[in-house]
Length: 82
Image (cartoon, rainbow, N blue to C red):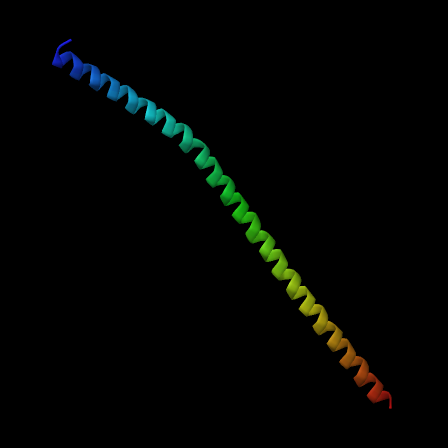
């Protein structure tokens, strides 16, 4: 085998290795994209849960304010009745 044949063989092996690495990279990149989409879905769900929890805190505050108003109204009625 002469030097030219060895060089051509080396180039062919290099091209094959490059193709193999590209195929393996594609196999890794595809699931990575799926994981990213799932992570985005989880982030949207987490934002919704956080929003619902914030609404619960506001409802608690509204309930406390309503109780206070009702107590003030009842006190005022008692004062008016004498």
